[in-house]
Length: 390
Image (tube, rainbow, N blue to C red):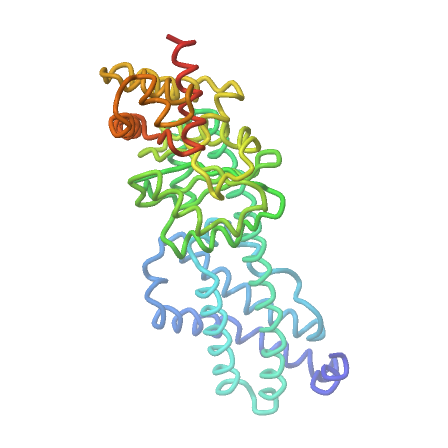
């Protein structure tokens, strides 16, 4: 770089003379650049007057900075980042692409002025100087927007963590909804809380896959867990499990527990409570699918002392069968005692087909099949808990 600069930078005496001519031309170059931008870019006219005035300041600072930089020797960075003088809200009003358009337009205007208004002997040197200075300005712009992105990312992470924490604590107020909206949450029809392993999780992949699937996703670590709030067109718990299955590779290698679907952010504590309880209890079911619904872990959660799971099992099994009437409750208890349909039919003095029919009705009423080992486990606990809690 130094050798290249030595090839084109004039002697101090010549440089001082050119600098005087550039300084004299600076107001005209600034005016030309601003007029050109106002013509080219309609978004400038759409800005508030205060923001438009700051763009004028930045362009004038850039042109004056070029003159000063050339006068000092036309080497190294400028005296400072020309964007530092702009207020921070301007960065949110003007995108990086628009800033690059401003830089490009200003450079073109200055080059045009140099090509037409400066003495012929100055033009080659000035054009080369413009190229070198433009590089520094581009780096300045990249630095400003990179810092803004880092700051915004850190702030978004803090807000996201606060939203997740509020959901877990059951404090999803209007303030929390406002914060979630600021993060892109779109108030979807169905919401679920999903909990998996933090270790080995790929946050960026999870967000990317969710976005492609049209699913809202907010996530934050809590201890060794990754808590994810998913929102989409979920009408059933099965829909939420299917959506989570598409994201499972982005979680850590352990179990993934999906809470029940709710329909507004204020109700997510129900989903979060079930998912947390399921996450604590899932180790008791080594063959659990991945992901697994928290409601499929009711027996393990009940054994862990989850009061909600205990009442749910008692209600879904014992109370449901008791309230149904008939002989379903007795038939189920005898079936568990004898271990077979034939033994049940002999004990109750009924035909085997009648016993089989009653057991089928038990599944209709409770959602658990006595003939399935996993479901039978839940039914047994439901019967015991029903008698204990009644």
